[in-house]
Length: 154
Image (cartoon, rainbow, N blue to C red; front, side, top):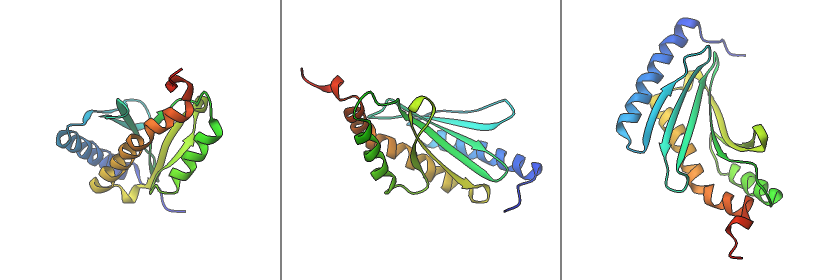
């Protein structure tokens, strides 16, 4: 098992992530908020304006060994569950560094993690871009599968 980062190393990385996220927020118009938790867990959120989904919020959580990231995609499907989950599994095959999963109250999330040693501005940008593009690319199809009767013309 790899060595955990020391408290001093994590504090330095926290400062870097703060700076990087503020830089990304200032550089991209679709990033509308960047904030950080103030409790015991080192956690940031990045809120982005979308086209298909109104907002995508990515949570970044720093641990001693990994940076975890996740975003809520859609609530539990009301119908066509098997078709929706098959659709997500097929999409998982094309993702790099993230995967769709079922979480709290059967909602669909997009999650991933990376070793703390790999956290850089380029990797944060890649992670945010991957999660944003993945949600935007599937949101409408997930709605039409999991909530099909809401979209019927009857």
